[in-house]
Length: 256
Image 1: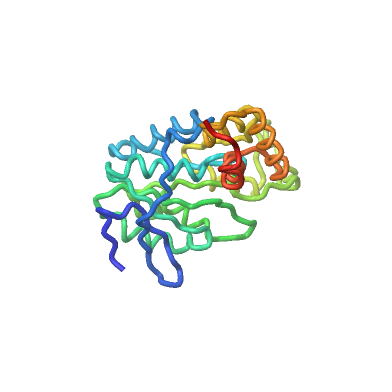
Image 2: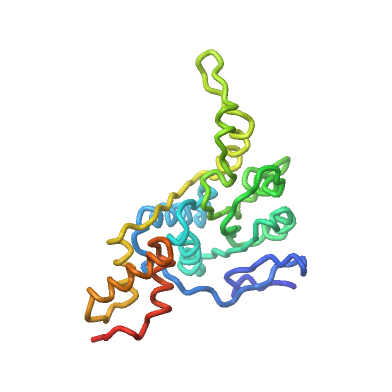
């Protein structure tokens, strides 16, 4: 299926079709709606603008606590820069082996593409990440200048880390040499030139997100008590928990 990239902001790779499926309805989240991630937002915006201007830019790994806005930030970037030629192609981790074929179809187009892989992680021994490596740094062919990879993950090194991996490290002539397992972990994540870390929200930050979702509620004390109880039931404070709280309780608090 041919995609009209002039009007299509994003596409998703579908393995059973062996093709990209156009996405015309994007989550409308905007950058100014994402709170308490100003540092991450600023750096991702700067990198994306460099990419759009054709200047040197980095592949980006957004890693850290779940529900803190990593994926939403990438969606907001697309909504902000669509008119400037930015497009997003989402590829699931299990479909990364198709990445070279996807890139072949995109590299000569007059748009700037972000390959987006959400919740990216690999188990020891998996080989699909090798296709990702080649796209980011090239093989015999240079990586395409109109494509960058933006990935989210709960793991900084994208792979599980075990104590025994550190025990394999050696000191030779006073210099630390990591074991092969650690080298493998770092060799993948190190290809992302920009790492953006996300940490769990404290209670004040969480309640700020709740307040933004309930701007007209009069009784803030009661709202906050309910929001804190909800977060405890969810097992943590996050932007996702705040959104789920809103989905559950919107309309149940008195508004101005």
